[in-house]
Image (cartoon, rainbow, N blue to C red; front, side, top):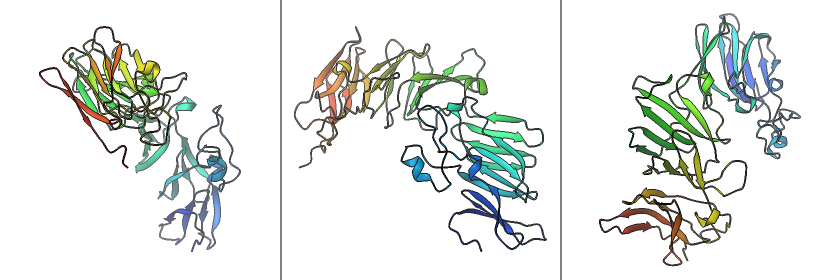
Length: 380
């Protein structure tokens, strides 16, 4: 019996001779074929670092496998490698760590190993998440990257990816006047362009373009690593909340929200509303600058941080863009309106001190705007 509390997995040896097995912990591998538990492989020292690098991108060494607090107090995540899974196959232990795949002989000596090959840019490396065995091939899952298939005899591998680098969470769609599909996720915009000539066309005739927030979202297959889609990085910080609206302006640009983000002067943008030119990928950002967008200011909560929230973006019959802006607590601008003529911004102020949460907007035949509110923000 292995009586410590750090066991991750037990692998019985089923060879018809021995009744022993292996215990995989978060830092060591033990073998009890002799009747005693002997540590035969040092898992921790395969990656004896904090989960995240320091501010200069350098790995930070952990003092020991029990030093999670050392990393956590420095906001560097956990300490050492994560054991994902292990398997006993062909009289060998196949061990998957988040950064390394290893085949071990029963005495703990290494027979084969493969570090995560994607991406070759160190700041964009992903992690292993799972693996499966098929004869001499191994299929490894990689976080937000795809599937890696490799042959342990030839050491050759191939990357399999879906037709987008976005996660499978799209919150709003629009079909443009050109017949293309644009879908918005928390990480940016997917554009499926129909009947366009190019090297990346699927069986339905689409070319997939992904405009991705950067540097927040790094873990996706790069253009030179696959031929299923095209990626373009956009320099903006992704908001915490999903975006439920995307529209096409009369000039062909796409406008979508980026909800629950604080304005901040930095080398990349922290916008609440983004206007994207879908072919050049040039974009305009709109935040609290010139009071265009409003934010939290100590009414709904104690926070006075100008966190910006966007509920709905729509276009009226004249081509003006209307943005409902809940938690409009500092300036009281419940609606932000961009003119179709000169792109100038104007606003509609709150009608009373309780109307800080506009939700939706619609226009009738008389060109009147109707706004729906939530009135639970200021409970007595």
